[in-house]
Length: 531
Image 1 (cartoon, rainbow, N blue to C red):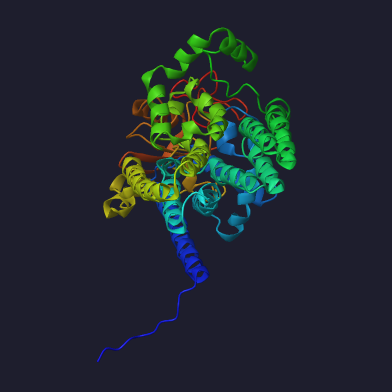
Image 2: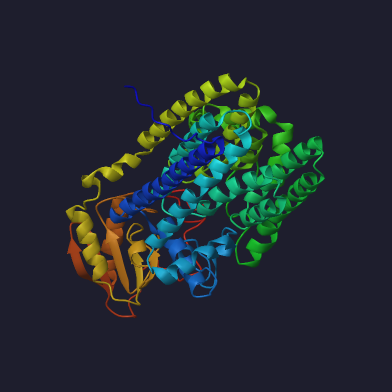
């Protein structure tokens, strides 16, 4: 006898809702994974004493000051670069958005809180990417294929090498720029122009040069909205086109000098000219020489190849990529060789722009195909996304977080931490760059640089080169000078030496007071990296 089991019919709406719920879970999982990996990368580097006063220590001092409702002053920054004691980071880079990280110090008073903040901000971009994929591709493919695309792009963004490299570099203002760029593009795509404008405003408060990218996006938005007959979008785009560059100009020419900085401090473009006006004239009159400067040495060409090739050159088919041009130009025309490498945090500024441009290109391609063909292509795209994700994980070295050996300290590192622990609270310290972040919470610490500062305590490492010294021998020479001047050894082990000034009368030959720093006249060991 045959039996039949009757099952209630599955409603299409219920199936779609269930699919969306599974998608939300997957997106949330990617976001949590992004936060966890970025945080573990930073914590591992911190544990191994690989994050320095430049830049984690100076951001910790500045944002800690915000938490006390003070201007963002950093002794590390002002002493090394020769600024007066009252100098604040607003005179260095215009990044008042950093004040939003201050409340976290009320919960956890530790430099590592900035690594947590940055990881959370990077992870916050994942659901925005998911919404952007749905808006760009939702009408071109079916629900199942769309879910594959959403997952694929979330993985590409959240596991991007650019985010992992930024996490390896400690904390920077790029932490805010990444989700804000994504939010700007997604809200504008949703025609929520008020919120898009708010995101653009916050970007202008993140770093003084980001207003240029905001202005370019305003031009793109205005042109597209005009073609679509969207008057509100055209007005919003026009406003961003004008206000973005004006915000950058005001920050560089007015605010930074008013806060004690120099508008020309980070001008490092000697091949183009001595100023922005000279550079503009050079670009117009000598386009071939400008192209040569952008592509030589070969590291610059490789940087561009990596930047676009890691996303299969999809961004090149989207006008959104124009928003990345000012940020890429700052790197390829720079005299600073650090800007030509993918190993620092600079690539994270353009990463959300290029991911959004890739999503836009994918949506445009899918709309040009039949739905069946688009669905098949979506699966292939998800596979490619998995490959790009794996490539990013491998090349960035982020997989090191699962190796116990990379979490263990050696005897030299343990000696350094022992020396740190012997420094009393509240004293003034000159410390090795990589040990400075361990002292920012409880001492007045500056980095040990090329000029002696007559600090009460001096902590140095004589075994390896530390920024900004040219080599380890220069650090040994400093040790001999300090001992000859009257400093006494309080601790010494495995090349780590902690010295104490015998009395306030001890003055080291060649020492300077705060307000006379190493740059630009003295610091030739390394081109400054905070920029």
